[in-house]
Every structure is written in C-alpha cells, then in structure tokens.
Length: 487
Image 1 (cartoon, rainbow, N blue to C red):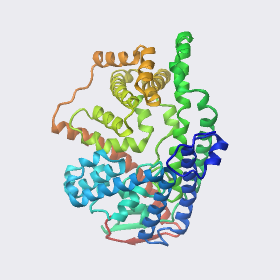
Image 2: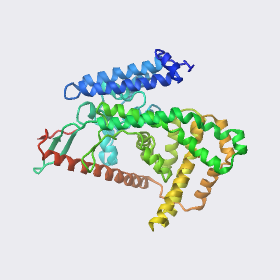
Image 3: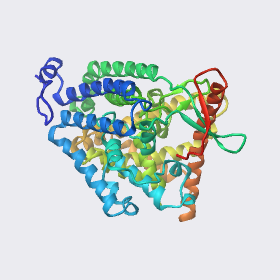
Image 4: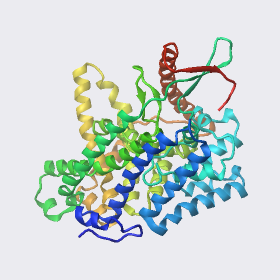
C-alpha cells in the first residue's frame, strides 16, 4: 500500500493504493489534469472577448487556491500568507524599498518586486532593454497580484512568467501587434487568435511518454546504486561511467512530465503564445521550461543549463546575474542553492556547478576555435564534448538527487573528487579572459547581454511582423486600426 501521509485531501487514497504511488503524487497529477480541463473551459467560456479581466482574475485565483487546498491542506495558507505579507510590504513600506527584502520570497514575488522597482523608481537609461521591456509602470491591485501569484494554471508547478505577460494574457492583448504606420502613427494589428490545440496535444504526448518512462525505467535504475559498496568494489570504471550517465538520464523523465504538463495547461488556457516563426506557424513556447532535445544533445555545460528549467534560469539572470557587481556566476549559483531549499545536496551540487561552469567556459574559450574546420574535426569535437558534458552533468547533480551530505560525499569520495580536481586544474592552467573591475565593466557586460537579448527578440519580432503583415493583406478576419494606445 502506498503511504497516506499528507496534509492534503485523502479522497484519492483508493486510487493511490491501486497505482502504488504516494497520495501526494496522485493528488498533484490529478489536480494538474483537472487544471488542464479547467484551462480549456477557461479559454472557451471565459475568453477575454466575452468576459471582463476582473472575472478572469477572480476565477483564476479561486481555482488556484482550491487546487492548493486540495493538494496541501492547511499548508496552502502559506500561499496566502507570503503573498499577503509581500503585498503589504509593497503598500506600506513603499515600492522603492521592496527589491531587496523580496529576494527571500518566491520567484514571482521577487520578479514582480524588481519589475515594479525598474518601472517606477529607475530611469529608462539605467535599464537594459530586457529590464525596460518587463518594467511595471503602476502598482498592481490586490486582485491582480493574487491572480498572478495564485492562478490555477501555475500554482502547483509553474512555470514562472513575467507579470506583464500574464496581465497581457488576462486582458486579451496577447495577439495584438503594434507597428509604425506610413503616417508615423502606430498601426495596431489584431489577427485571428491562433489555436493552441496542436501544441497542447504534442505536449501531452511528451507527458505520456515521460510518465511511462518514469514508471517503468526510473525505479530500475536508482541513482543511489552509484554509492552501493558492492557495485563500487566490483564494477569497472567504464561500467561506473555508463551507469552514472544512465541512472541520471532515467531520473529526468519525471521533470519532463511535470514541466511539460504545466506548460500544456497554460497553453490550453491560451497563455504562452510567443509569436510566429518564419513559416507563419504559431509558437507556444513563451513560458516553456525545457527543451528536451537540446538537453539530451548538449555539448557544453552552458547549453544544458540554458535548456533546463528555463524560466528559473531567466529568473536568476534577471534578479541576480544582471544586477551583480562582482562574480555574478558565483552569486547566481549560491542564490539558486538557497532558493531550492535546505538540503546539503543542493549546496554541493551548485557549488560544484560553479567550478564546472567556469572550467567549461575556460576550455571552450581556449580550445573550441581549433576544431571548427574541417567538418569531420568539428564532428569529432562535438562527440567528445557531448560525452564529457553528459558525464560532468551527471557527476555534478548526484548530490541534488541524494540530498543528504553523507551519501553525497560518499559518492564524490568513490570518484576521488576527480572532476573537482580536473576543474580546478583547468582554471589554474588555462588563461581566463580578465575583465576590469568596476561599474563601467559591469555596465558593459550588461550591455553585451542586452544586445544578445535584443537580437533574439528582434528576430522573433521581425518574423511575427512579417507574418502578420501577410495575414493582414489577405481576406481573413483581421482588424487593423490606428491607435495611440501605449501598453
């Protein structure tokens, strides 16, 4: 019989016993499936064209709080308490003072605190283009604030989204594009709303495959076996390497399932539209949290991190990395460890991650350009770096799975801390590009990052505008009107 220890509802205990899964996991999956159906209903019957933003905020908030209550019982009060206290701080103390204390709260609250601070208490010229785009220019109402933090689409598994993106969705402005017209006025184009059905179905298929892999394979390849005394004493090094990689590979489907289902729920409600690609196809990856193919084919530590838990990586970048005046990489990994929780394994993983990230960057900067030509040499380089990256990632995240300090240190001891030593030697022996300390250097780094962000956004925008222009010129139900409205 599966354990029945939970503070949430025990209504599904018979189902928990039947499938031999803990009741809290059953509650989570069932509530997410309910949220998926609710999202379809929300988009169909409470569409922004039929219902006011007030009603959409109220329904999204109440459904979210109900799901939290079902899953966590009285622990769900935590959502209301932390949201309420944070909102009171912003009202009573003042928005200009919220960006520092909010760092100890959750992603959405810290993100919103910085976005309000950027929009109301910093000059535009002090902001990077990405900060300027996300800046919030007025104080949210209590209902808007609760809806953003506690809506049913993201209260259980996220993913994180910016406040402006969420409000744009609630108010039905996700499909509007503003361009400069020939007369110099802003041309407001609105095309028929794209359907998320294909994107939702594709993501649900990924969920089904991921869940099947988790239920059938993950339990047969436990990460804990990496520290089994008999295995360590008898297995050869190639066997240990292969099992390390395979066991961590088998641990990933549960994350694929949870994050992809969360993304599908938001898409089903109509949230997550990003624009159109070069072929005119709608993109529903605005708040996607992972790219599975890029993760599994990563040839660098950075490539893996850029495609894993994407929204959390963006949060860390926006609230820490871009705002750090010294050692942003180290500060970002420390913040990530603190945010994840109190288990020592988290800190071991993220401290190891600092060394591995810096070492991988040094290797890439000093070696990669020697292997770009001919194509056969580049292919060999990619194969080798893929193998090294997958082993390094697996080595780094074992403590994250084991959680406790003793088994984590036992694992690293079994491996003689070999990758730690290699990483430190790389940092000592390979030249690292030095940057001048000080404000100007920090601003230059921010500008460089901002340019890259702008290039990506401009590319997306150009694709979107090109597609919409073509659509507006055809005989579709398109309304183009002049407007001086400013978001």
